Image 1 (cartoon, rainbow over the protein chains, first blue to last red):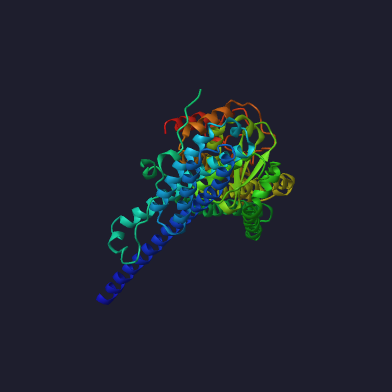
Image 2 (image 1 turned 90 degrees about the vertical axis):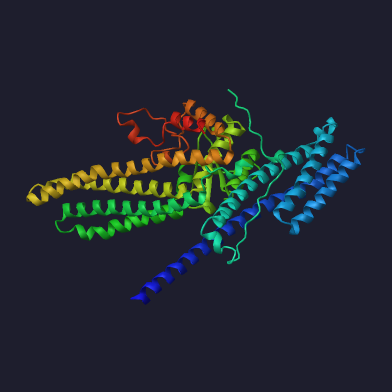
Length: 186
Length: 306
C-alpha cells in the first residue's frame, strides 16, 4: 500500500517537473524568436545609414563632425550587434539615434536636399524602420515579461536556476523612438 | 516603462489555444447536426434506413471541413474578387501591415485589394503562415493613417488569435448544413405522396424530419453569428492594444458606419468575415439575433472607454 502511495507521489512530482520545464523552454523560445525580429530591423537600419550619410554629405559639405559621429555610432552599434546583451545593444542604438537626429537637423538647413527624391526615400525608409523597431521591441519585451514572470513565481523560482533558466533582459530604447500618441481630430 | 507591463495585454498565444478547442468543438457540433439531419431523412424515406445514410452525412461533413481548412481562403478570396497587391503598390499600406505584424509577432500576411469604393476589410486563412488580409479600395482612399492602422491591427488580431480558421470552418460548415437541409426539403416535398400511407410511428418521424429541416440551418446560422460577434469585440480590444491608440479604430468604425455604400461582392456567407457588416441590410424583427456583428455604436463605446 505504502509503495503505491510513494509511486504516485513520485510520479506526480516528475510530471510537474516535466510540465514546468517544457513551459519554460517554450517561453524562452518565444523570447528568442522575438529577439530575432528586433535584430532584423536593427540590421536594416544600419544598412540604410551609410546611404543617408552619403546623400546628405553631397549637400552639407561643412558638417564633417556630424557625419563622423554618426559613422562611429553606427560602427559601434554594428559591433554590439555581433555579441552584446540586449542592454548593451540598446545603449549603442540609443547613441546611434542621437547621432542620426543631428544628421536630420543638419539636413533641415539645406532646402535643396529636402527636394531630392533619394533623400526623401531614405528618410521615409528610416522612419518606417524605426516604427518597426518600436513594435518589435514591444513584442519582445512582452515575451520577456511573460517568461520572467513565470520564472520568478512560486514554485518555479525554487528550481528554475537548477534547470538552467535565468531571467532575460528587456530591450529599452530611448523614449524618442516610442511613437507619440497622435491628437484626436474631430 | 509602464507600457510593457500593462496587465491588460492579451497574449495571442492564449487566445490561439482557446481557439484550437473552439475549432474542435465546432467541427464536432456540426458533424452531430449533419448526422442527426441525415438520420431522420433516411428514416423518413426508408423506415429503418436512417443508419445507412449516416456514413454519407459524416463524409459530407468531414469533407467540407477539410475543404474549408485547406482551400477555404482561396474560395473566399475568389468569391470576393480580391486581387493580390504587388510589393510596390500602396507602399504605405504594406508598411502598416508589416509593422503591425512585427508588433504581434506573426509572419507578414499576403495583402489583397477589392476594387470597390465601400470601405471594409477582412482577414482569412488557416493559420498565420497561410493568412491573407483583404482591404477594399474605399478603405485605402477614405481612411487616414491612424484609422488604417486601427483596421489592420483588428484584422491582424484575427490572424494571430486564429479566429480566421474558426470563421473559415464555420462559414463553410454552415453552407454545407444549409445545402443539405435545402436538398432534404426539396426531396421531402417531391416524395410527400408516399409518406401519406404510413403508420403512426412514421408520422412522428416525418414531423421530426420536417422540423429538423427547418431548424438546422437556422441553428447553424445562429452558431456562426454568435461566434462571429464575440470574436469582433476581442479583435477590437487586442487591435487597440497593438496600436496603443483605440481612437484610430473607433474613428475608422465611425466612418465605415456612416458610409451607406453596399459592398457588391459580399454575400450572406462571407458577411461575418468583414470588420463591419458589408451588407447594410434593413433591420428585421429578430434583428439582433441575426446580426453578423455587434452594433457598431457599442464597439465604438468600448473602444472609447479604453
